[in-house]
Image 1 (cartoon, rainbow, N blue to C red):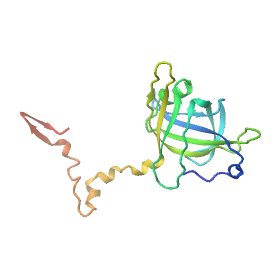
Image 2 (image 1 turned 90 degrees about the vertical axis):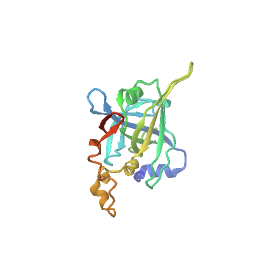
Image 3 (image 1 turned 60 degrees about the horizontal axis):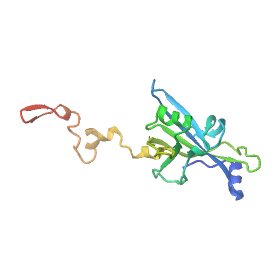
Image 4 (image 1 turned 180 degrees about the vertical axis):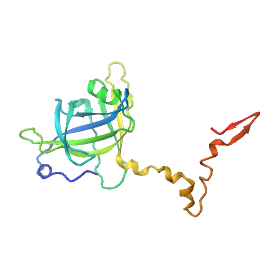
Length: 210
């Protein structure tokens, strides 16, 4: 779910005279050398520019540098929902752009946060109407590369899921014996802390489980 847009963007959306927009992708991943978080922005424009966006983390306006990828970056239509549905989106990159390669192969992207924004442009001036609005907030599942056939162009697909996925994870506390006992005395986890120390005979030898 995204926040309500500003008045200028709302007026542009209601004008029904044709929209001009660009998609922006902000990827945060780990530096493979030192583990530090690194961020890089890519957008469907052609130039490398600083763009004002509404941060998906804080809701505040921030300015970020986005590298122009043009048609080498494809963001599919994203359904805008107001419930807790876990949405899945596949972003496609060409493997030819060095900024794209740095984003999805130079860094460790697994489970890294990702933001997708939409920037609306004035039809007359082609300038931004307002800071780009969040369209998708989530995490990266993986970045499988599609290897091209002879004479064909390859691509990199970034599989991402919405941040509501975090609500489907079980907390470690719910896997403890203490927690389960609150449920009518359920003792399914009563041996969790010691089972790894059990020794089970198998043939002529015995040893700990696992």
